[in-house]
Each structure stands twice: as C-alpha cells, then as structure tokens.
Amino acid sequence: MRALQLTGPGRLEMREVPVPHIGPDELLLRVGAAGICHSDSYVLGLPFALREDPLTMGHEIAGTIEAIGAQVRGRTAGERGVVYLCWSCGVCRECVRGNENVCLAAGRAAMPPCPGLGPDGGMAEYVRVPANSFVPIGDLEFAQAAPLADAALTPYHAIRGAADQLWPGATAVAIGIGGLGHVAVQILKAVTAARVIAVDVAQDKLDLAAACGADLGLLADGAAARILELTGGRGAEAVFDFVGTDATVALAAETVAPNGAYRIVGLGGGALGLDAGPAGGPGLPWGATVRKSYGGTRSDLHASVALAQAGRVRVEVERFALADGPAAFDRLDRGLIRGRAVLIPGQE
Image (tube, rainbow, N blue to C red):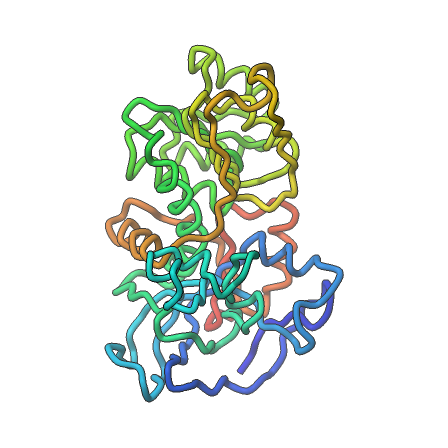
C-alpha cells in the first residue's frame, strides 16, 4: 500500500509499504480520509525522529472495516467509522472513570499512544487500529468524519470542561479560527446559549467564523479592549485559545472574567505569567481557572459525531490526494487552509 511517512526530521515521503497485519483485538481499516492537523506539522518540524523506523502520519482517520481480529465482537466488515485517537489502556482508574485522554499508563505526560505520533497513523491506504477505538459514523461523509477525531473532539472536550461558565447570556471567546477554532464556534452555538466572539489575525478567518455562527468577529489587534468594552469591563466568562502563543495567552489573561475559564488548546508555546500577588491589571483576575486541555474522551467523540450527523457541526475542508500531502502541509504552514486539510487516499 501507499503511505505518507516521516522518514527523518522534516522529511515527508510517499512510500510503498506492506498492508498491516492485525492482532486478535484489532481492526484493519481501508482509509477513506485523513485530516492534517497543526500537531502533524509540529511533529514534522521536530529536530529529531519520534522513532527509528519511518512513521506513517495522521491521527484524524475515517474509513471502512476491511478485516476483524479473531477476538473482536460487535463489529462487521464494511462498517464505516472514525478512529478515537487516545489508544489508552481501558482498565486504569482514569480510563474507567471515562478520562481515557489522561490514561495512567501514559505516566505524567498523560498522552496515551496516538496514531501518527508513535503507532502508524492514517495517511495511508490502510491502517491497523485497536477495535475499541472505532466509533461508527453511519453514512457521514469520510472527509467530514475524519476531522471530528481531533478538530471536533478537542474543542468539544474543552468546552464541556468549562460548561459551568457557559450559561445563557455568557460570553465565550474563541481565539484562532483554524481547523479547531471554526468547529469550536459551531459547538458553542450548538450546545450553549452563550454569545460567541471570534478573534483572529486574518479577516478571511473571521469571515469563516461568521459563516459558522459567531456573533462577532474581532481582529486580534485591539481585541482585548473591545472584549472588555462589550462585557462592561469584566471580561468573557470563557476563553478558548486554539493558538497558544505568547500573544494569545496574554490576550486571554487580559480578557477572561473573574471566576472565568481559560482553556489552552493550541501548541504555540506561549507562557502564561502567573504569580501569587493581588489580582488586577493585565494578569489573571481572582477566581479564573486555567486548564491545558488535551484531546478528549471517547464519549466526547461520540457526542461530536452526533452533532455532525444532526447537521449542527460541519467541517470546512479542502481535499487533497494522498500524493499531494506535502503540498497540503505547505499550505497549512503558510496559513492558506480554510478550515481543515483532508487527504483522500482514493483521490488522484
């Protein structure tokens, strides 16, 4: 089969590799679509390899069951689904509590094995996955379903974790209207009655936010003052940062309300200044909570799929053939993708 593989730091190649053999508790999927995420670009840009062997990339995967392991029950060949990206142990204290994304087996890093970030991923014609990672999608289009594995799962989890601040009439801010941010706007509108303010550095991204239901779009320059003005000087009850740079972290700290929720999702490496002094000025106000939010739970993915099936969430996608993966990565890195780039193995 063909697979788009990381063969060395910064080196992405299309290679011919064997179709994976599955174990007794695994499934072989024929890949229908694989999304490209900024975390994929992050891995591609690392100055070291994640493993010695070439790594097939891709953690947003949708496809059709081609073969079923001998011990798997309840799945049928031909069934269509999306792959839950946290391949957790399933039996530890956190997993049985429904917190698979912070599985104890992953240690303090709390990042369970994830396709394309250790195990081979889905930027290929076939992929081997644990049977319990498969979430059915019915007749949902593969290009729509694949990005749900991260672009919907991750914001859904962050939003659910701030639900106590998202009462009717509250203000929620989404910073960065890219692959995750434009889906976050839709989830906020679907599951809350909060006013949604989108912030980005580019007007075309704000136009996308408006199409997704945002009540207001603000360019990042001057956004802090405007958000405070719109909230009577108090700030937004919830701020979701899908960028995570120093600039967006500072914006969030300046605009989150007392007792509000700041959720950091982006991997921009920004540093949040936090001290034990009195609250006031540009720093975090009293009572504000900060949470680094990683991925989501299997239940969050089921909920994301349900929203997509109900037409409440639709991912804006740009489709590329598998062989055009390097060009898609380049467009993503240059900020030219509207929504999510998705590779289609059967597209030429």
